[in-house]
Length: 597
Image (tube, rainbow, N blue to C red; front, side, top):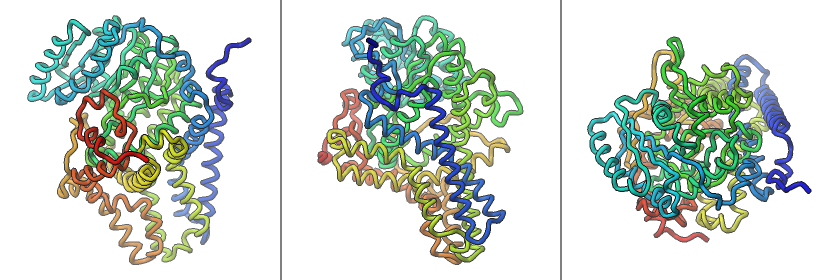
């Protein structure tokens, strides 16, 4: 009799991978076609002219990202509800591991830092290596602190603290500190330097960022799954946000926590062995990574020449080209990152991603890539190119409504409202899917703070996203417009600690967004005021960007949100021991927050 496989647990996991991909892209294509047809019909209230055609083309550019997210969420929801083992149904190797398998391989733990406070890094690493020592497996691990610090004021205390840290642990676990004098190649160059020096003496490497926190259980889970399947080249953990006392970070990561679960499970179902790599909180197989994943230097004449900034997905597609699988472990397993505490810091990080993703176009025609790998690179580019299309829809649509002098003469009301409703559903489908799953599981619902607190948090996160995303769209558009003229962003130091944002700083950073929102309100207020509620879906965020930046960074607002228990995560309710040891204000504040119901 055939042994039962994790693939048998769910009918939805049964179709071959090629059939799953065909089904997925067929659904995406049919949905996009239907939405475009509806948009043409909606805009034909007074005939269909050149302006209407431009709006439909812009709308078409925006659709793939959200339609793909919608179907990922639908599939993810079905897997979450009907699979006996959710993770094994999309990552079969995980079903081979039960947690007691001996660690027989050598794993390097790489911590990449640059101009960071050393005390923070040491505080985050200590619980992990302590637990590895307590479990008696420390000889199988070697911690490498890979510094690219260039600030002289930070370099000296960093070296002193980490060398003392290494000396304190030298009899129990191997710790190596190395600082490069120049951060050539950014983070990818940092890891490439490690591979050249020490990569050959280890089987795997767990890659951590300066803001990463992983428990020993999470690290050992990754190692055991990699041991169980020699075809795995990269295994990415599902990263969740650290508890935060910043209102901005709390609301943002509550929404991301919901969206990522269904989205990641759904995408893993059809992407299979061509999964994502986010560059941190993941494990890589060092021999094929060293041999196949070196990034080229983009030549003169490239839109953005030089070293690749967003290295992770390029390394993933190169690993897959070499014949190794790249998969995501789609479970919330004590793998954390710290999100930016303010809107200003979030924009700074996002523009760095925008610049890096634009470099992907040079790899789209690389020979030997899998079709899904090309799709991943294309979608990463489209994520940012869609932003100018959204702003174009707002500007041209506003001007067209004002010119016609009547909303009814511009768009059919019934079809327009239906189109807006469908767009909002596709936009928030990943959040909705996970929210339904949470609400139907009493234990998980209590971990999020109880039914009423969860629903209130969901509403706040939804409104917050409606305000935040258009602000980012405008920022992407402005940045992309500057690329042909040589505008770039560097890998600057990130402000990770909670801090207030002054009105003056917010105004300096966000006055263009505010001006756009004001222009829309003034134009429509003078011509077609009835259209204002609909345009606020896009214009509301830019209009309110300055007060949003100030209030969401306010310590007073952050403390109030914590005290009420809004946007609470399970880790706020019952913090894992390594997080409790961090003694952050968010963890301490969670202890005094009202219990879940």
